[in-house]
Length: 171
Image (tube, rainbow, N blue to C red; front, side, top):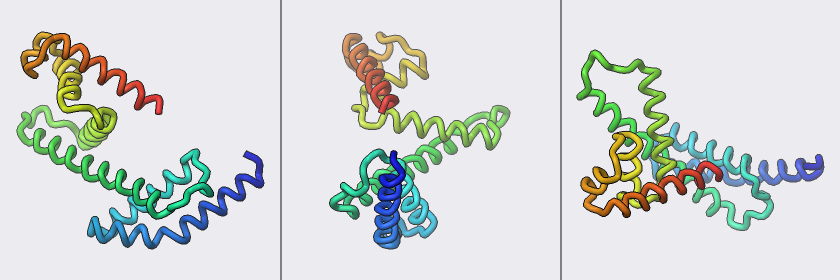
């Protein structure tokens, strides 16, 4: 990008931040009721705007745009916490002899959250079929019996999940 274009972009981004940061934090604080989370989500929202390829000068409704990004980030924050709670509850039932280290737990939670985001948007049975095939190493016949569908439907579900994963990875 030529220096003048980059300078102009930075000015627009600075103005967007200056005009909307406090507003966004207070909006998030009303919804989340936690100052640190509201600050974190607001910061990440602006980081995503900066990292975006979109021309910030073309944003016609900045508050609606920022709200949309922030809502998605809040959803992911709460979903990640839900995943973490479920994983930690599962660990409580596991044998103490096989308890992972704190680092291994953090890595597992992060990997599960990433997989959850990767499969987000897929129908429930498609996600289940994919997870059964990948993690439980079930065959299509076994998955079909578990889901109460035909083997051909399972094959379509797996194909749909794989195509979705490729599309998300390329985006």
